[in-house]
Length: 263
Ligand code: ADP
Ligand code: MG
Image 1: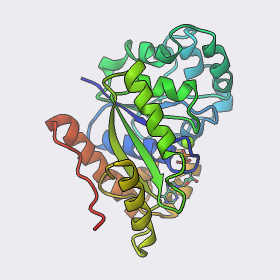
Image 2: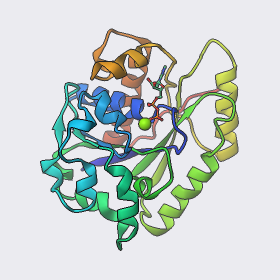
Image 3: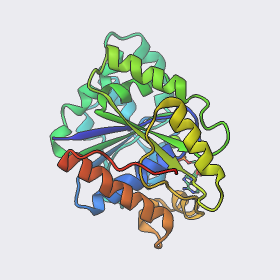
């Protein structure tokens, strides 16, 4: 059985892409076979895993429009995850898909052809609630929301959860909201914890354990062509490793994902 997890927040810079790359690599280290999907026309996930979007002949764009078989577009990475890459063409996919019936199901249909090859599929949603994010949420079993622990982090969360709710009612009744992942977390001050507590209470959204600390290693990693898991040991990589283990136990044993105690 393949578990499909969408990483979504229409806010940019909250570590969606970082979470997909790092979690994917951490799961691969557990001998889990992982497909990561870049649904952002900016192609940041594609780039951070060592492929230049400008040099690619085909991408998830062609798959969504039914012009390429998904298997022909997949790329290997040094993080031992398979990548369904994005190129800037994807910016036009929104408009092209909008004219098609069943436009929210394009990714789900494509996954049907490869799902058996992977234990886990992680979907990096773009910073919008448009048709690409709807495709990600329609294909997924579960969604997590990365939250940068800063003031105003809650802005937009209500709108995202309303979108998730609409997807549950219309295109994907089985979609479950796993919770938030706290990113760029600063354990030294109470500010991060206060912000998280506020968002979690306001939206009744559990925060998964552990939070991901802020570290400069992530900036270094995104230029290196591999995830932070491949660099020197650091607290950010350790946190993603622990989160990967918690998620894998949840999927394998059916246990709830441990949540972060903010008290
Ligand atoms: P999004 O996909 O939500 O737009 P990114 O994953 O691209 O966000 O992250 C935005 C920026 O924050 C990137 O420069 C990334 O390297 C940096 N970043 C992500 N997580 C951390 C972290 N835990 N500590 C420090 N910087 C981080
Ligand atoms: Mg991103």
